[in-house]
Structures are given as C-alpha cells and as structure tokens.
Image 1 (cartoon, rainbow, N blue to C red):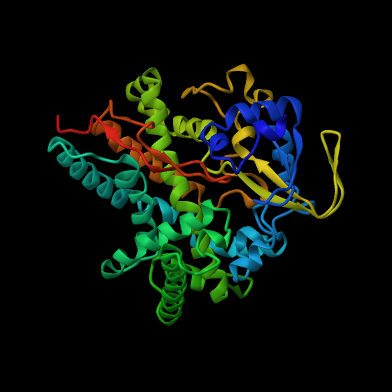
Image 2: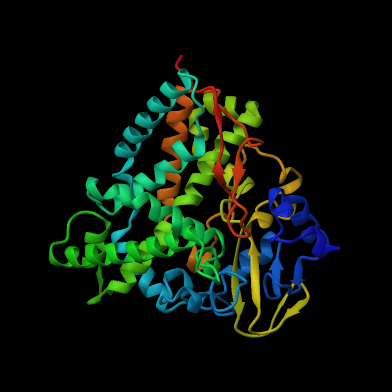
Length: 416
C-alpha cells in the first residue's frame, strides 16, 4: 500500500505529496522503496526526529556518494565532488574557508540593491498588468530576484549578465532532476534543448574559471575576490573548491529561494487571515517566512548513503544503502509540531525545522535566502497587499527533490 501512496517519481504524487507523507509517518516511517525501471531501490525516512538525527550523523549517513537515489551520481556528472557531496573532516575545513568569504555581514550589504531591484520589477509588472497583460509572479519576480542577487554576489559585469540567466535555468533543471544527466542529454543526442543544456553548463564553468583566475591576479570585494584570499592556518581554497561552490550556490540557491517567495505569496493569499496578520504586524514576516518554508519546503528530500549497518525506529538498514531524507514530510510531522502541523500559522514559534537541513550540511546560504525572500515579500506586500496567484493556471516542477514552480500567474498587480 505504501508504494502506491509514496512514489516520488510519479507526477500525481508530486502534485500533493502530503497525504503520502502522512501515511508513511504513521505506518512505515523507515520505508524500503522497491526498484523499478526509473530508479534503484532506496530507503526513506519520514518522521522529524529520525531525519534530524540522521543528517547530524555524517559518519553513518554519508553525503560522499551523492544526494539522490540515482547510482553513481557524482561520476555521471563528470565533475569532482562539491562541498555538499563531502563529509567531515574535509567538508568541515572547506566550509570554514568558504565561510570566510560568504558571511552574513557581506550578504547583508546587498540588501539595498536587492530592494531597489525588487521595486523596479514591481513597477514594471504593475505597468504591464494595468495594460491588461498577463503577469507571472514566479518568472518575473520570484526567480528574477535570486538570479540578480547571484550576479551581484559574484560581481558579474553588466555586459555578462544576459548570459548568466540561462546558466542558472540549466543548473536549476539539472538539480531538479536529481543531478541525473539524462535531464540534459539523450541517447541519440538529437534533443536540441539537451544539447543546449550541456553547452550552457560547459560555458558557465569556463566563464567562472576565467573569473577565478582574474580574481587571483587582482581580487575585488565580490564573493570570488573574497574566496581567493580566504585563509585559515595558511590553507587556501583551490580553484575547484571555488568553482564547485559557485556550482552549489547557483544550482542549490536560485530555485529554492524563488520557491520560498512564490509559496509565501500563494499560501498567505489562500489564507488571507494569515496575510492580514503580517500586514498588521510586519515584525511577523521573518517568522512567517520560516513557517511558509516549513509548510512548503523548497527542498523536499535529499539522500545519504549508510556507511555501516544502522537501526532507525527499530528497522535495520544495511551498510551501503541510499536513504532519502524526506524534509517535506518531517517538517509536517505532528510529533514535532503538534496537531496543527498541517496548518499554516504565521505566529507559530518554530524552534527547529529541516528546510535548510541540519548538522554539518546546514545550508550555508540560508541567510542569503532569507534576506532575499524578506525583501521581495516586504516590497510586494507594501505595494500590492492583496496580490494573489493562480496555482491552477501555474506549472509546478516535477521533481522528487525540490518543490517549486515553473510559472505562477499573478492577479491584483495593476496600478492603484
């Protein structure tokens, strides 16, 4: 029965995974999913405490064999492992070095330029809406914000920014397919979109390799400049360390942040009493964003690989098995959040959640994601407090790993 209710590769399940998650939590919390033509067998943990404890034990639940249930994910990419596919102590040293150039203080300095960008986008969107044109919240605001911020963060020249957006879209597509290279290639090589995707990834890596070399010759005050000079006890980051981090930030940070912005507008529009609470008391917004992220987690699931036999909730998982951490399920577990776990409550005090994971792989860009979402939603609600979106006319990503949107039409953006 559970294999019918839980199938992360079935579009029908992905449209609304939460009933299936609830069934797993109550009846099969350490679930062995059978293999089929789409993916090999894997385990899935659905309860909050089980996932929380597992991701904080990298010595048992390792990231070094990839983050999905697909086989040889890292080898298929043809790239060395990035920081998210490493375990301590190597990951710890690398994270500490990267942290020297990617601090909350540096990120906070971006706030005013983010605010100016958002205001410009909203003005343009309102103008088009007033002229009777359709406006898409996700593509025109939610996705545009992190793409702009990443370009600012890396200090990309204005002349290069038109090239950057397609790279972000391609890496997002690759991530949402679980880093499965079939998302970019086909057996006969005849898919022009796939060929363009492969070319885009190659172009991005070549471009950033050149920018890293330039930064080593004369580091500026952008992220690349700070990373090339970051040092701890005489140790510095290598070119691949920096390039790999660029990959992680682009692939992992763009669409997840966009999803948070879009879901916040959607959820508070569907429950206008929650929107009105935030409008009446703007100090609720940071907590409301956390609550929306808990309720609709941008990252729904990532996998680890067991390094030894381990028992979880009385079930033995053998060594060498892929284990999917169902963050989206854990974040709605009544055992952690009480009987209101399946309700949105912008006043909820969330002491801990798994939307940014936990432990050594706690999202290094969480402060950047929260800042972007705060500014975007703040400015949107100030200009258009009762804006709504149309999920039925929108299009969701079909991904086992990320919950977000491809498009999400907006209403209520015309000029006052």
